[in-house]
Length: 465
Image 1: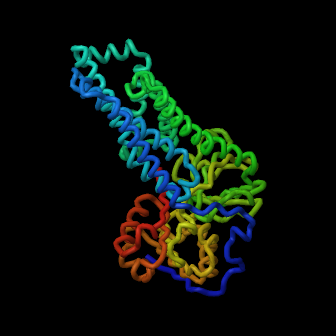
Image 2: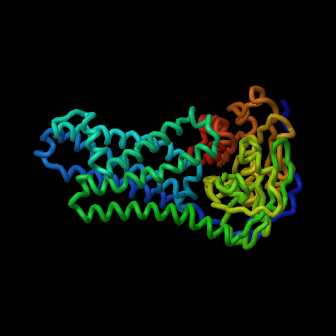
Image 3: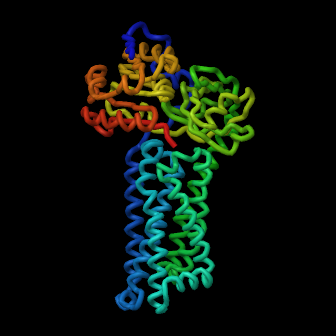
């Protein structure tokens, strides 16, 4: 184990904020009230939907054979479908929401919600079948055959449910970790097909919609709006930025064991709204890579006409990046992420990174305003793994901060309470930025909260599937 500290010294020759020096366009600042408003609208829509279901039932219908099962089946189906709609909105990465929640925030909400649509829609299918069977005085199995054979929309919805169940099973963490990221991503796209197959079924057969053209119109407009947001922000805007900036690979430069920097050149990069610490979805337009986009953090602020990412080989895609040739065209989506200086509550900051997480710290340091006096902790197994260390050290000196390199095996070098108290004694009075593997980020996050860091002062970017 070794610990190397760099004390403040003469600053490097740079101005207060690198992005303004390089002429890049600063992104709009995050506006938390937008997320609060979105939350109110989502809850309000759910209350409205439940109100429709309740108001559409009468006492006589409920007490008829199969009445309660059909009622509960209708309610669970609509609520499950509505939550699936919310997941689509999260996936659309609406910029004002994404700038506040960031990748980690969207992923957390996605995980919290993801199981509920599948479970509720599955419960809907069971309850509706039970209700119809009781009403027809037939068996459960017989009613399944009737529904599938006599109602085409039910058959399509059943296929959609099957796709949802498959995706849900493959998304279980223990199973997902055994899949290649590319395989899981491709399968996950089928959720859009599953929702499309289920949409018409609700309008045609749902008692909440049958005979209620206004309700049908509102439900259709809501879904069309969600689909439109996906098309605009996940397809339209990336295509526009890809064509506008015409980015191509210029050089692939080794940085350390299994780590390379990819330097790209583009046009009009001063119009790319990016902040230090953000990432971009990169799609390299070569054979075997063109069909998949991967998130890589900018390891420095753009220097028009150049920009750079630094990538560690941890999978098929990142390994292939090292073999890219100059001239390779690149399609981009983003920038994304709330791991930026705009998330600060305090003026001073602390940064804690492990592994390739140093890339976000490197670009964020470059974008910090003066006076932040950053204390930076970087953990690595060997000194060779400390990529970009000279650049980070120079930026820390410029900001009159301190850099601590914690080098050694994980069981020897821990970023625990004792280490943080010793190296960052005023931790609770700083914004803390944590970046690295998911397990590392989770551990440091809990430790920081135990030491009194407020949740709103903790900002993290986890590298995970």
